[in-house]
Length: 232
Image (cartoon, rainbow, N blue to C red; front, side):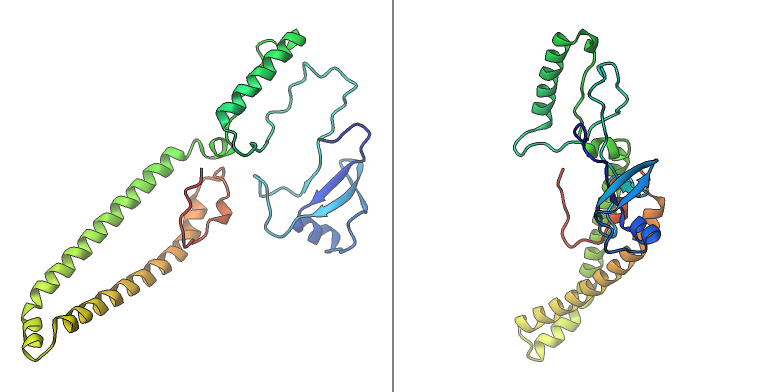
């Protein structure tokens, strides 16, 4: 939102800046006409940036006419805000309820008009969260089954190699030498399996992204990450 009398401004997406303005490096400060309103360009976003909607071409402040009585105008579906560090959704909800009660006392037209504070993640992924949890559980179960099968195969292979190990020991191989050989073999197997897993993951991400729900937050940014993130 902008204050009363403020000049209309706009921020362009990188794609729009390239297509419509030929990557003009001097675009800042110039005025362009959008929705029949001249707006001053105050910035160009970097490549790949988007906010909630990937097809957004530009961002412009919402202008409100404070000279009009807008107490009965509720055409803004929601406002996005960042919680102050140390605050929770519950405390923010309690504060908004207190503000709502004071507004209701001062302006009776606001009676029964409530404000709900909901996390952005819940709004964007709330409907698909059960499916994601079920998918995670299925993948975890499949991984445990695969680990159990590999462990069983390694155990069966070591049992079949008892004679070989006994011959090596009789020829002078120490226990450390035998353990080192078994460790190297297991390490090579693990590295080959990991490399194959990375290849399948890199190939499969593109296919999964095509099948993923479009309202899932930050879908285009899903990478192969070295460390999992459990941030809420």
